[in-house]
Length: 494
Image 1 (cartoon, rainbow, N blue to C red):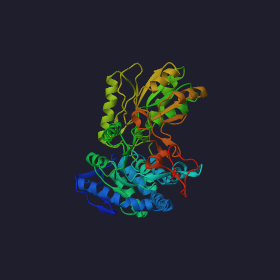
Image 2: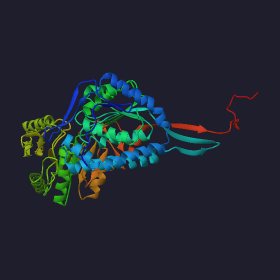
Image 3: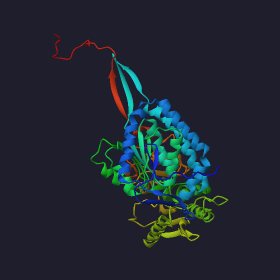
Image 4: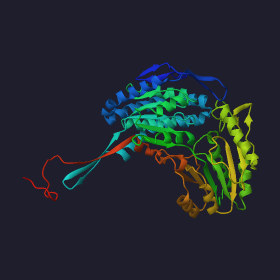
């Protein structure tokens, strides 16, 4: 199938319109080629998108759940039928490998059935008898939800908000990352092709200013955000005077991976590598801090990890055989990551593997591995790239304390053969995604996904996304109007 160019401009009330704001360009970090070109939304178009969503919401909610599900399933069918087209677009625009993009497309289609299952499991109407009355719990949509998407999973992550929001009866204003506008436009066009009514999903393109206008709009009932901690904290401050508006934040983390008494060193090294360096380190659940409980095998483990990293295939998404990871999102991002590595070494960190640009492209980076044992006061910030720090400690207790020494709390992992160690780890660790002898980036759509601390605001996504897409109504109901058998004290019936 020949790829179809995604539409440019904004999708408002079912119409694709040219933007009235500044020009927005998307370039491939692999070869610098132009992927998408259009104009950003202007303030009046943000207003128009919200007006369209508000107008469409009552009729969308009035449709039966079965009708909403049927449209979502048609969307999933379109994604499956055009999966290779979408995968290639994701790789071209984000620089990630094609095998990863194909996996991302699979999660986009799979989210439909998972969201239907979650809706029935967590938000179905519930009834029970309470004396002479019926007690009923119902769930209603908030109304108009905004979704701000990230660049690292430009289809999967916003899709994970959009699908449950629509199924619950909300309408959506969607702004993709300004670094991946083409993927966002492709998704909106696919929903339109699936028969989604005009105004139910509206797309606005643009940079930070458009995102701020979307988040601050008076017609907004809820905001679903995946992105940086700085961005999430700014949104939280802006919502301080608006408790009536739902806010779901997923903001990454400075994630620890602890190794304690691991017998299979090859398996341990493999899990470390995949946890830290998949997607060129651009997953919010990637391990950033490797914490080794030192024993007789520590040096062997580090030697095996270094050998795997030295042999790691890194390259562009078009190459065959396929590389393990491709570029980061842009040359500018690559330069920032390189500066972070340089600053660590200036603080006394020992480079075990040097992070450096490859093939003259600042977006294509070799993996960095730096030892920081004995160095205190390091910045507790997420480095969103292929850079892993190593710290040695003397005990499992010290490892858990070090793992928890962060303001974040998204993911954490333990590599160990010891069941007792896992029981202690899962009891004491502070994170929302905690894995044992699995990569930290492993997650299931049937589980909650989110974190504590500065990683989020306790509104997990994944299977629990249904929870922040509707609100509960409690009712006591009786078909018969009659006096109770026992009147309240002080009341007489004349």
